[in-house]
Length: 342
Ligand code: SF4
Ligand code: SF4
Image (cartoon, rainbow, N blue to C red):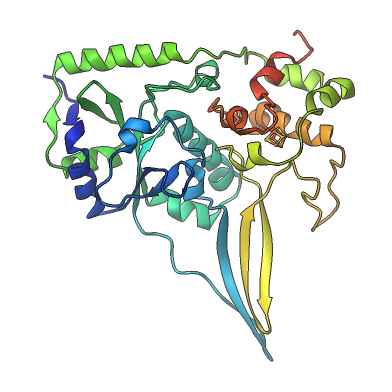
């Protein structure tokens, strides 16, 4: 007897229904016209057929594109600040891919270890992540080159694997274990189910055919940092639209702005991008006026500076920046072309 559970695919709606009693449940959705994690409507599970990955990464559930930080009022005595209502409502994200769960673990290093960001952390701590292994990786995915599996993750609470008409369920954390203990309608997985899951995982792994050699990349980038010709050529076709950074699951830059009407106002933060010429213009000047410097920053921040600080590459190989770039700028190709052999 296996200690893993399984659920029939036709019973997923019932399981999500149970979880909806305790959590705001988010699932992959195309309702808004673009694939993203959105509040479950209580019935639709058609995403099980079309879902490969979302366009908008799950970071949006923790660091929204625009977020109120506080409101304020001015009177004779000065400014009075009011924080928004607490964000500690419990949420469950169903179907997150292992690469995106890894991206959240990477973001935690910035928002928990380097700084304590209460807005991000309150949402992160009240969220359960239910992972779903990829069965149809995109051509632009290169997660396996960065040591990330398309079907396994230590960064979720539960991990589901497609084994035909069922999903095999693995408990990854205590939070996941507790959730399973409170869920009904699950069956014990058999040894055959486990064997099917193992085979499915191997098949998915082999479907990630895009590869890069990331070994020593941090040192190679360090050596070619001042190679202006290389970076100019590399940046030539980029149009500085920022899509690759805004939709990257590990990018976290934000801008802060105040909306003020008479004596009342609200402070917001919103996604920003180091690809924009106006980036950091407000507090100071953009130190990267030329496009090639901004492109170099994007690549080196992920593959050189972040590893120097946190000992992890801040890219998961999710391939979004490759799929979504309007001019087909390809970070995997750029990394392969770094003109330095160590
Ligand atoms: S999405 Fe493409 S064009 Fe836009 S900033 Fe990124 S690399 Fe440049
Ligand atoms: S840099 Fe590109 S491939 Fe890497 S995590 Fe960001 S969007 Fe995904």
